[in-house]
Image (tube, rainbow, N blue to C red):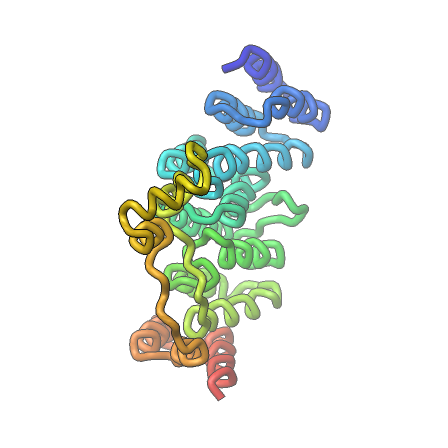
Amino acid sequence: MTAPIFDLTTRLKAKAELTSEDTLAMRRIVWPDGAIEPAEADAIFDLNTSVKSKSREWVDFFVEAMNAYLVEQQSPRGYVDDAKAGWLMARVDGDGRVDSLGELELLVKVLESATNVPEALKTYALRQIETIVLTSTGPTRDGGSLDAGSINATEVKLLRRLLYAQAGDGPALVSRAEADMLFRIKDATLAAANAPEWQTLFVQAVGNHLMAHSDYQPLSHERATELDSVMNDTRSGVGGFLGRLAESNINDGFRSVFGKKPQPVDHDAAVAADRAVVADEQAWLTSRIDADQRLDPLEKALLAFIAAEKS
């Protein structure tokens, strides 16, 4: 660890609050070389955990710096690898709770800004967000607050960001795990004074899971790494690049990097097929609705939405 950041974090840990001036001092140390080293990332996370009161400027810096370290500073850019995903989960779990001002925002930000992350991190983020929404209280980074036992507008916004995050559990679509989470949250908060936005999100997101179509599928980390390696190989220029492919058969060469060229599909037919609620989806929906042996208002709204979309 560089001496300047070590000296600064040691001094700031003794303070009751991380102020805008403290944040500026940290920025001046961290950003000049344009990169955050692992030791610096540990120091920043330690400081964020140690000092409980933080200015908005500090929280912004913390999220910005940690997201850069996790998502941007590696090859291929935008892909969080297993090591960094493990590091993030261990750091968040370090004090036994998720800090709603910084760590909560960081989890969502990573899923929003990354192209793909390991499945373990997707599962972890879902579990943490569900726990936070149901049990936590306190301020969030955007000025709203968490209210245990009910769903307010701030929590709806948080859930929406997670559900539609690029690197979330179902990129461009709401996954089964995410839909299950929404049903659990609904059941736990059914009698509470929830924000009107909650019913809208629940209905639209579960409807998305059952009926939406998307052609988007991010490259795996392995495939992206292979492609990144080829595209960044500048040893022999374009001619050499094509020559290497030609040596083994150009079609096979491109196929090994980019994958097989997809066969033409009837897009309208694919959309229509996904729009239909098939037997497996019907069985899942029925089991979720029958779980408490009654049809609640949100479930009625969901069924009305599905019926309207199918007509």
